[in-house]
Length: 118
Image (spheres, rainbow, N blue to C red):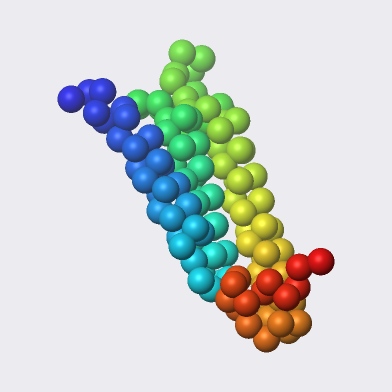
């Protein structure tokens, strides 16, 4: 039973990743594709949370903690914040591309954008 508890977050991260990947592959609308990409990237949040988790770990604030206290990994928390910023930037950039594609082609269907190939 204990191994199920430790593997469950990895299974959830894999499931969220596959849901996002399925949305990207089957999408017929560019905005839906961007949202599916954001869902795919949120699987990394679950993965990073599981990697940095420690049972009965304290927050990594060392002001009042004795040296033998178990803490969660602060590097993983920094990576998580970086991942959130990168995802927001990527989603904003791709949505700007979607807006430009709609202005130039008048459609949001990936199949109808074939005329824009060079």
